[in-house]
Image 1 (cartoon, one colour):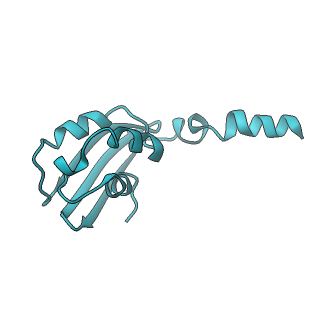
Image 2 (cartoon, one colour):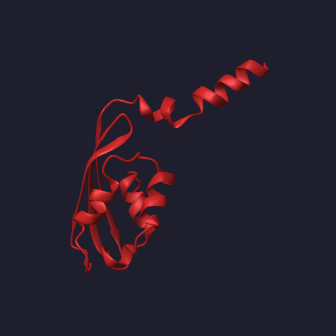
Length: 110
């Protein structure tokens, strides 16, 4: 039984096993928040964001392509996204938004 638990912990509970071997997929999501409306368009391959674009009627004082660049070639995984997005001031790009709003959109939560 110990070997089974060890195998589960070291192999089957890992991000690589659960997401790293997943097929390509595209994700489209639209999210309304107090500052506007954001559309999220992602292409993900083996669990890695290969393309990401934001569209919508939101306001911000900084170029949104900077966030898109930060997220390229990163894991499409909540904790990873949180780490990256917490390193910047989201409000500079999406007025009235916060990290949780963006993460829910990028992860496909409505």
